[in-house]
Length: 214
Length: 399
Image (tube, rainbow over all chains, first blue to last red; front, side):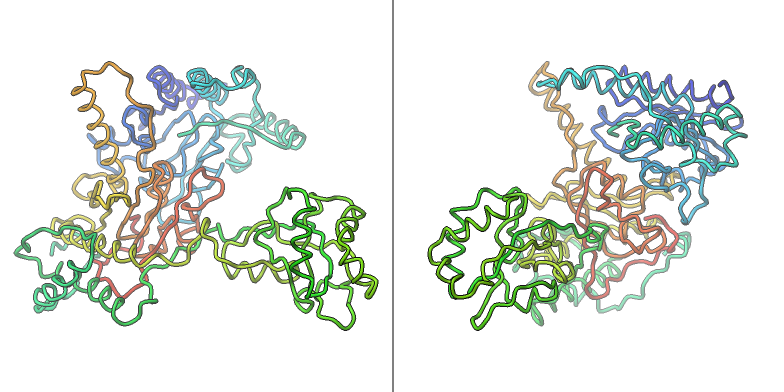
């Protein structure tokens, strides 16, 4: 561990923490251009009462206040959770250069989990989306958030659902990234992990990743 | 018109537009309870708007006068209709047609509650209609019907089924005459109601036949004409908005969010990607944001007025039960924004085959309005009536 991507993802995680402390679904992101973070974003749906105020959009709007839209062609996004279908389409329309994310979004993911908006044939050029950067940290933030939500509920759910799970199902990297790119991007270690994970995944049929309702 | 509007071009407009408009407009308003109040005075350069509005009204008028069954909207096909056929095992038997009523009422008393709802299946079926399933016991000289008894899960034991049948003395006598009657057999039947008439036909082929009575819960194949008329009024409003947008150099795409309970236009928006330097400032996104802003503002005012220290109400999905009417098929971003906002129905005028996120033949065929993996679905209707003169926008545009 410890690539430059992990460094940027740490900043995105900081934003996700900020969202957590603001009672928002903890998702955070940063946009990086020329090695510099040019914008940050965190989920804002609860405060704004608007289901489309995802972290990605807050960052995009902040960038567009001071930059022309074509800056995205040379900008990368680091976001703690896989962009949803809406955000993936938005990022593609902006011609984002690449997206790095933490954990997959099994409910709404637009970069391989539910739809492949980033790479399907389309009007704008596709963009690559790489998962797995501080994935476990991203998942734990979401779990802590939903646990707290459960406890706040008027009729708390069963005790079992109030326990913080700390185990992780393996990430099927091959579902998101072409095999040829994995070693270059993540290093030899990740490739070995992937092979191990694929074996484990074959053993356990159901694979629960994350549950972000955003 | 400003030449800056991409490849769009305006439509030639007849100078008699105003006259036609006024002619159609006056009677139209009187006949409709729910009309959108259009601006009371026509703008000076309104001839283009007028001509377009007229075209909608004319088709609406034609629809009323000429053919009351002609519809102006079609439901946009979705992956929903690709639901696979699932089967359930059922008990069936043959009975003499003359005994049908008494046997059915006898069994009603005997049978336990069925774990499967079989209400979508036909109860009594003529011999010819199930023959293709083979192994039908052909009865002799009387008119014989196939009777659906219950699911195997309701009564697993064949002996128990036999006992129920023969506990009716009338049946015992009939069986003496024809031993092939009342033999329980296992049949395959569609487990769930079909969603469309077509599907009902396909599913009934080779299985126990479905009774097609429409499916009020899942799908309606036609909009009620009241709704059609209402949407035509909203379309007039959209055309006004696109006219204005086009004059101002914006992309001529517009959206309304309406409350079907009150007919109120909750929010309206035009595309502002050009003036705002934001390629994502689509009219649908803006319209959804406006609904939220309005509610936020309302809650803040309410809290101030009541001097209340109470917690604000828990977050509601604010477009729940609201409908979205727009000029062009929304892109994947906007379609998913509708899922996130819990929009209940989408109505649009024109397909966007390259960039749309709804129609299964648009783009990669996402059908986002009815994707089983997503957690919200909304039905969608597309204009299918006479030409509405929309401004052309580049087919590669994400609307």
